[in-house]
Length: 238
Image (cartoon, rainbow, N blue to C red):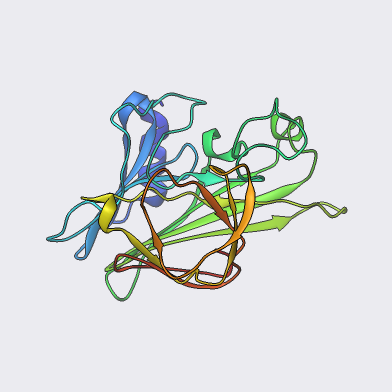
């Protein structure tokens, strides 16, 4: 990342006492957000939130100490944006797991200081000749990150072409915890899920999710609120 590019980002999008753009690990450009409520870091490659720490509290997100910060490489931890598919591609195993936008360059769309003291950062990505080799459709994705007393992350996808397409995605969040034995995830009772540890068997969740061993489950829950040991997770699709 050239100093000229960072200078241009700061001239257009820096907001005093809210957000500046700097060179991060591996030379990747990042948005450093700091306001009266919290601090956060967003790597522009992948529109990847790697840190959120409310004032006076511990870091909320987990990033692997072995995470690779390199152009074209996905970062392990934080909140990777998985799109236009989640996990393995449904029909072509040669395509990258979790889609391609998590390792692609996103552009800054806008920044804003909220009336409540929060900071709003919007990043966007559109289809290109390179993306159409993996996903032959016209699209526009926009990720909105709101850093305040809480962290809000919202992914919006627009079909900019003339034909329909199917896609899937996830904000694949990694949380810092002290003891996995105490973890409880509320809000998925009665929902079906695919148990990837038990031969992809479809099961129904009974009560809160508890970590009693290796667990890798894909929930079919749609809409509502989940609570992860006091962390509220809201969305139209969970």
